[in-house]
Length: 123
Image 1 (cartoon, rainbow, N blue to C red):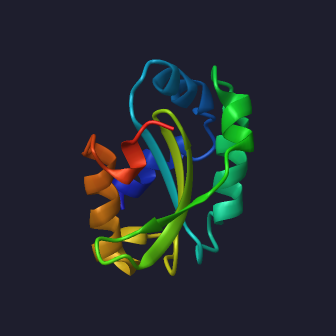
Image 2 (cartoon, helix red, strand yellow):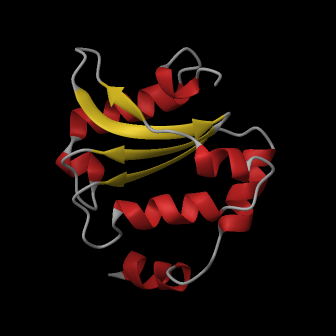
């Protein structure tokens, strides 16, 4: 209860300027949403990532989605990216992606930090 109460101040704070700063600084940014999340639906995640005001916003807004596959070739989501900024929709996951899709969440995080992964290849 204490942690929840402590974090309530973050709920309505707009941090998109900080995300823009990270993206423009070359830091890898991964935003992900489960496609079954009814608390923060993936279309909302898509919308706010499209509205982040960074140097490549226009390119990101028009970027196409690519099917995201696991190591066996099964589709586990879709992503769009420009340089180091990625939005990933995870299939069959709700608000807590790691609880709903633990293997796919592990793949996603591994790929986020692996410079040779699909999520990090240059456009």
